Image (cartoon, rainbow, N blue to C red; front, side, top):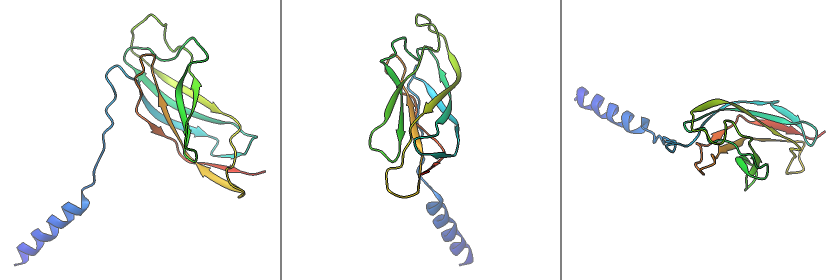
Length: 149
């Protein structure tokens, strides 16, 4: 009886301990990014800039664009419904198909409070798109505190 009880407890523990894991597979030929850092961790609204650092890898090197009106990185403030997009300069010669990797810094200016409180916290989600239209995996930053001055 004791063995049956122990088996039952182990089975329940295994069932309750299982969680669903979603693996994000990068698109073949698409970029892969990794969150590195966000600084500073506390900012004054409209006064301080935020710098987000990511690592990137792209097997065919088609990251960035020569046209400054083409935006290839999206940065979504998770307090807002839509992402902002930014230009990424060429990270490899445009006619080459070489594997590239490195770090990229995104500078955000004029971050503001949405409510009337003295402070808020937010995080950012970034997605990098290559010239072929392949999107990277999304990455999420650590939280940043925004304070009214």
